[in-house]
Image (tube, rainbow, N blue to C red; front, side):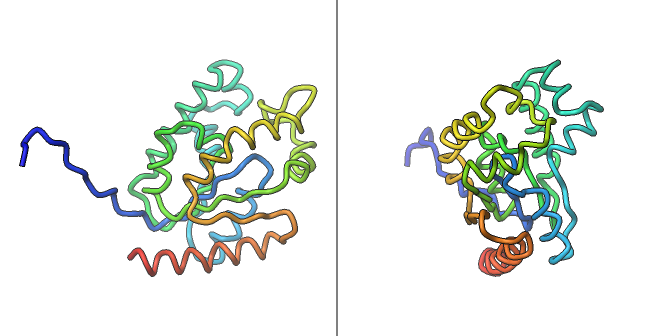
Length: 188
C-alpha cells in the first residue's frame, strides 16, 4: 500500500438531534417547537442564536455585515451545537447555501426538509417585514428564485422531505417525530 495514498474516512456518527431545513415560511420554527414538545427535546433556532450573539436583528446584521457576515454567524451557531444531543434545531432558510454546512447538518442529526409551494410560502411570509431577502418589489418571484437555487442543496441535506401545504402543524410534527424515532433506532 502506498503510504502517500489518501485513505477514505468514515463520516462522523450522526447526532441524536432533529434538524429542520427549508425556505422561509415553510414552518420550521412552529413545527420544530411542536416536535420538541412531543419528544421532550429542547428547541433551538439558529436564527435566534445569531440574533442573541450579535445583539442585533437579522435585518440589522444584513445591513451592517451583508449576507456573507450573516452566513458566517449562522455557521458559528451550527458549530456551537455540534456536540449537543436531544435538540430540535430550526435553521435559517439559507443555511444550505454554504456547501460546508451540508455535512455538518447531517452530523448534527436527522435532517428534515419542510417544503411548500411558492404561493403558500408567499402567503405565509407576506406580513413579516423582518426578512431582508424579501424586501423588494417581487417577494413571490424572489421566493421562486430562492427555491430553484436551493432545492438541490435541500435535497442533498435531507433524510426526509415533507410537503407541508395541506398538512396541519400537528400532522407535520407527528410525521417528523415518528420518522425520527425510526431513524434513531436504526442509527443507534
